[in-house]
Length: 400
Ligand code: HEM
Image: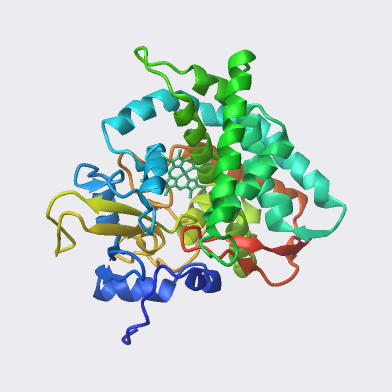
């Protein structure tokens, strides 16, 4: 490709049309891997599209801060920034170390396999509920119900409440004002925080064997989470674990529709290939499109000088197609090995806390789908989410 495409990595339309702007990414990696990107109502940022640069930035929190202006685009206003900073995603060490110590008991690699039987039961119930119909909307009736059911299970609350929280997440992640105006978003945040507080109160009164009880009681050297910190961590968990998993399920299934040869290969050796297929879906779809960092001292990234105070934005979908790292990077290969993708982040302190749980959820649901709905197929055109932050699917009719 020689001619420069129009570069716009922040318009929800770009992502709604194609999932990710693959053509722009490819041009940027080749011609301008650290590219100055204007923002209509913000200071602009350096768009980072090469794998190694994403890795370097993720691992140097002293130079590339998550706290300074948060990791979200656009920069939040002062009130928004105050709220964002209550979530570990927008903290720097040592504050982040303290927080991670308090919450990590619920998220060790050992815990995730323990959840497997519950996740299997949940996946079975979800598929049971729609099986006889022969057709449904995959996103709302199957994919979205897994993370919302799991968060309900983890927090020890009714499944129906998990689904309501899930609807709130989708409102918060839509960055299209016509669909979710600011006051609707604020109300969604308020409702979720209020719900979180009711969970904290309940678990203090009646402790149970669940993550919420672990979190409200967690103590390290006399330190514990305040009510406000619990509320915002709850919101982060619901948001970070919901849209991402749902969208990977939907986009991953679409990949199997689009690549019948890979689907046949996977079905022929489900036990052997399911793990690598899930990793390849993560690489190929990259549900989280980007996170931002603010540069704290003059530095150089990929040969480009960057001044203190400027922002860098890492595009995970592009890093995951970097031809210097991945052989035949644009090929979807369910047996790809090795596959050091950065869909969960590229290392460093903020690497996805829920990645072990997410991997179990994804593998369990794909096994359930491919064994109980072996003839599953598209039932109409998909409708993508209007978000440049989450590459996702809003509606996806299927037949089976
Ligand atoms: C397909 C599923 C998922 C994807 C693609 C994903 C992706 C990510 C990414 C890219 C980050 C930021 C990494 C960084 O800045 O280095 C992150 C952070 C995080 N994720 Fe996930 N995630 C997924 C599922 C989950 C689940 C299921 C949970 C919880 C149950 C979760 C909880 C979190 C939390 C709490 C953080 C913040 C960690 C920190 O700041 O230290 N995620 N995730």
